Length: 48
Image (cartoon, rainbow, N blue to C red; front, side, top):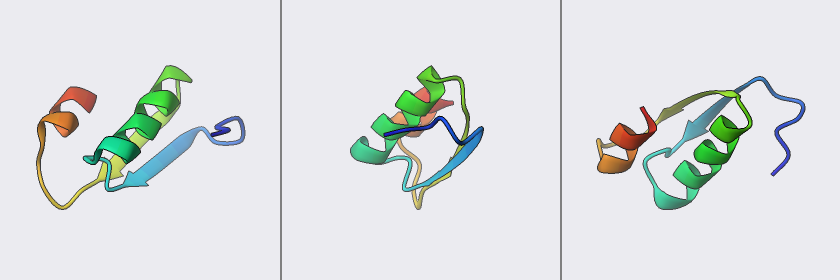
């Protein structure tokens, strides 16, 4: 996934295994990452 043209990225369903992986990639690229999910999870805690 190419994050070059974005500084801020919002992920819906960020607590899932697939979307959280994309969020981690964006964080590695030093992007501002926000997200939402229907429920709390350990994955969300790790991303914070």
